[in-house]
Amino acid sequence: MSQPVRLHILITTLPGRGQEQVEAYKRLAPIVRAEQGCLQYDLHRVVGDPDRFVLAELWSSREALAAHDATPHMVAADAASPAFRAGPAQVLEVEAAPVA
Image 1 (cartoon, rainbow, N blue to C red):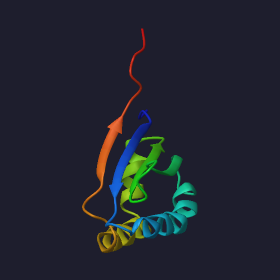
Image 2 (image 1 turned 60 degrees about the vertical axis):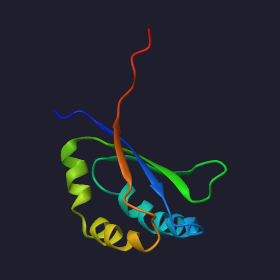
Image 3 (image 1 turned 135 degrees about the horizontal axis):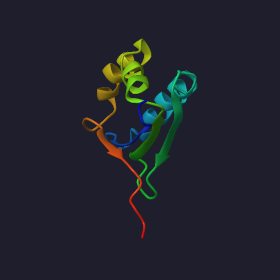
Image 4 (image 1 turned 90 degrees about the vertical axis):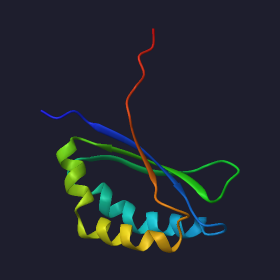
């Protein structure tokens, strides 16, 4: 069985366009959270910078993440985001660091 996949996605919008990212997230969040395999989908604004965000995602498996990426709502969101984003999002797959 697949292991869960945790992503932290770094997003920067064009200056003064951060609220457009928030609005896009508000529209998508309920749809994404209802997808099979979505365990977390939360947007966080960077303190002190209204145009920078971290999107935290947790998926039950790589297959669930791949299915999410191919949904019509995500394809449309990815096509619309260059209108307000400063560049492509930076996607980081993360895991818990071992603590001694």
